[in-house]
Image (cartoon, rainbow, N blue to C red):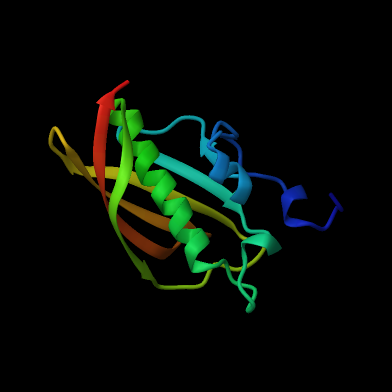
Length: 142
């Protein structure tokens, strides 16, 4: 890539590329913080042109995809259970601009044997831009 494209900008230390799902590979690259606190999963993304709407902001559906992935990964990391999304709610506070490094911090709030309740915040330069909540069906144990 050219030297001035967002992908060529330095990534924050501690992020690795471990996400291999076909859809995530298509819309990413999503990177995962190498070390996460128990119950927490932080995903990062450098916002490129392909992630934006016509105004140059990260598309809301793309933000929802990152939040969904962060909450599902937090659930898997904590409970070792795969999930499917039952419900997600999104609250958008600030736009995420092209070229920004954004981090989505997902965590489990509560769970029982069948369902996990989660939340995620999207942070850019220390500012919370988005908050999401999700309910996930817990599938068989891995």
